[in-house]
Length: 157
Image (cartoon, rainbow, N blue to C red):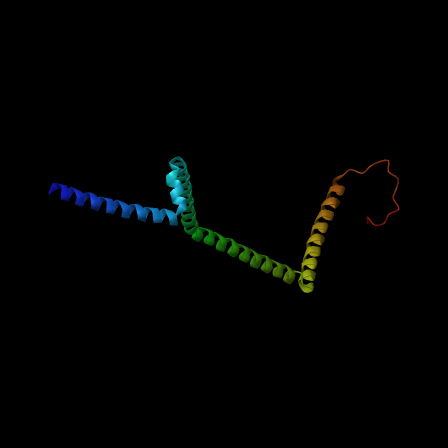
């Protein structure tokens, strides 16, 4: 009885082995590249190592891209606020320059200019009169010069 059981087990195992071998052989027939890799294990290990390194670099690049995206997203409100402040400053500066230019144009109207010139001339005449009075008083205090010829000028009377 044990020989019939052994024979049955041997038959089942050979049938299972044949089925698995045929399935693997069909898979290798459909995927010859994988069959080649299994036939050359050192090349397979080298290619697996290169693939791991490339995937590691790709993951690192994706991580840096995500980090840059987050930093940019967090900096955006600051940049936007700074840009708005600069634009507002330029706008206010241009408005201020325009208002100063208008005031200058209004101040340079002919009537205003004539009034300014008349006031300046009055101030200059007043200063000239004060200086002439001071010159006369200083000249009166000087002693007469003895050897001067008489002058024909009658304007000093």
